[in-house]
Length: 501
Ligand code: NAD
Image 1 (tube, rainbow, N blue to C red):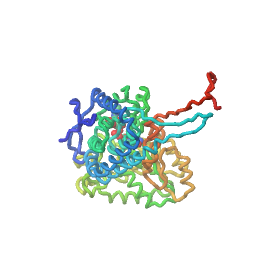
Image 2: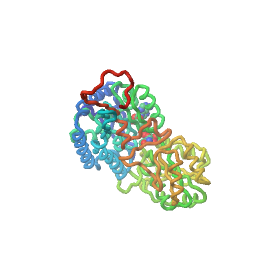
Image 3: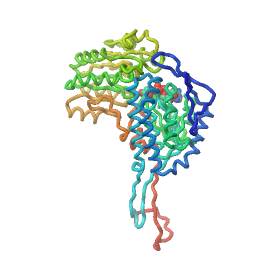
Image 4: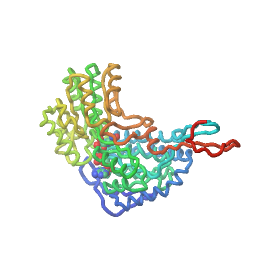
């Protein structure tokens, strides 16, 4: 049985207080325990980060970039090990875990360019013999609070950029799959990052609340469900902090009748059931514009029937279990709800054989196979609520306009996609849809590291998206310097407002 500690000031630290169990989702067995930080544990991490800040802020841009290059290289060499840790606690298949590590590494690669990213502007002679220039400076101690579904990638949306900008960082990972955070911490140390610049506090609401109210924490990045994102945003900003809080999602794929239906079916099955639907950019609703619905459903059902569902460490598995029993049961409850609400169940994931053996419902572990609900009513809870599991809903619509209206009146605005061969329709969609990340014949349009990731509406509280140049902006404060080097003609006292001369 493993035990997962905190990482504070370059050391593994045990608070010796409360703990929580970690499960192997494929078997349902307890595989270890994780510390749950007390207020004092969080304070110790903040103190380490506060003490490390002045020297790290003053580290040259080139030195910071060199450490980032080494960190990126170490992450690359430990991809497999990280993916195995993720798969064992989250349940996702190894290849999928490798994918999230790769996308996380891309943010470290982006952050290697920090000397360029932090360049300011300079204007000579804004007034006679007066120059002006802008600089961006780090905030101090910043925190990241992250969800279970991407235990490596989502933290890496945050800390490579925050640290490159000269901040010190405290990560509070999900208590359900915390091990990756400690391997990452040790790789930072091997890369030469000074102790105290990157810290990890394991924990739950107690740790989150302390980070939100601690006077030395200047900014908080959060990714998780909408109710907690709203809470983190409101509490953090009430305590004077800068907050970006990314919430839940319900992502639609609008399929126009001219689309390539084989491409659509491949994309819908990949984006709906990859990582067991536990992705904030998963496609959970297909809006099939008449008359293609029946043909599309047939193609999807045929593909779902060929999927192999099994443990994440089996190379043959394409989809693993869900993260916990509670979550599995909640997701499964939407199947009955869908039937009550008038949907037609065309694939029942409770009956899916797990790796060719017993059904999902009978297999120990947190199993639910890919489920397809057709003719889902637009006003149903199954359509409107985030399910966050392998349940794909198909809503039949009569027109592009009706589909667009359903997307734009939804609570969330994280990701969406249109599938069509009509460039004009696609262009109209990208303009009219009220969603932060849009795919055109791309089902999971996750922006690259050099763009910024974030949704609209209940999918984001705050003004700034993560990583890319918005990430650099979030983790720095702007300053503008107006400078005049005295010459013999300085002109004496003048109480008028400074204006251009
Ligand atoms: P969650 O909201 O339950 O937990 C996220 C973090 O908040 C964890 O670190 C957790 O310990 C902490 N937390 C949980 N309850 C809390 C409370 N009452 N007070 C303070 N902190 C609390 O989310 P999750 O189940 O880990 O992750 C799944 C959710 O995250 C889904 O809704 C998914 O859409 C969302 N998500 C969104 C994005 C995005 O980019 N918008 C990305 C990934 C996941």
